Length: 117
Length: 185
Image (cartoon, rainbow over all chains, first blue to last red; front, top):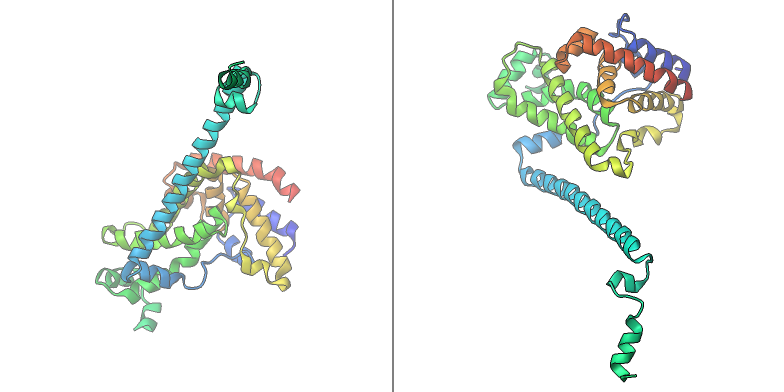
């Protein structure tokens, strides 16, 4: 089926007056078919009746951990950016000293303390 | 035994499943997996998440089977579970991945891409997927119900538990949105 015909089908499905009952079959013939991968039914059987229950919990745990990690990562990045902006506003620079909260006279005062001159 | 279930009605399969017959439930899975795939993969794309949600649909179905009173058709009942789980997943993914511009929904089936003889079919699927993915989920689900499942607007409203007027207005807005997007595809 040509792309223009597919587009026509899509537009047809959006028209409330059209009967859409035949569209899925036509699309399927055109190659627009959906199914789950091999072993799908077996995985469900395992989850329901097998010993894979622990595996399921493991997978869910990993998924939740992933989501939690993103949350923490996003918060961390946001905090770093805010900190950098506030330092830049307060110190007018991004020098190492400004990150440590030290003024420009820091080096001199250290030298003074060490040498006494 | 398994062969006899192929011809059995949904009510027989439900009863047998409730009695603990794994083969009967297996037949329900095989009977409705493609229908669920059309909803889930039509909404989420051919991703790992879609496979997970597909499994979740049938696990939820099994766990809630005792509460199924047969007022609606089994297919409608399964469809509702699929729609709810898919929309929940979209919400969850939107919350966490939107700021990373993660477009998992645009993933296409790897086995279809790998087949060079199916260029035309691949292109057809790509157009449909891109058209669906370009829509907001609340419009996408209605288009998926109509286009991929062949439901009428009334049936779509029943499954989505929405007033018919809402379905019609969303359909019309989806039409507006897609008109321009289809030209670019």
